[in-house]
Length: 125
Image (cartoon, rainbow, N blue to C red; front, side, top):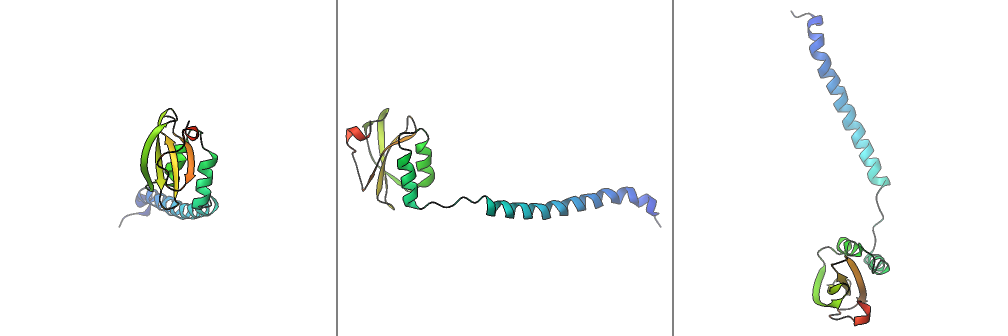
């Protein structure tokens, strides 16, 4: 038979690894559940999203906000002079809103309800 003094050095690392693993799994599930509930951002309605894009009109990064809110839902209607050269008019069919977007500075320069193929030149300067 093997003596316990001989097995003790071999079993100690396995026992320690088991305790660490079980503790990590238990603590991780508790902490992630708590963080998901506490840090969940309130969901914005489409009207609030359009209002936020309109409020940030002309500010750098507004295009990022536009893409984040309406990813995959923007249909290009055309291009026209404006912004830093040319702007693209993007239509959101679900909310019946057209955005005029300048890719050079990543800004939304105009927002209007309905399907607008060409904005007035003074709105997209």
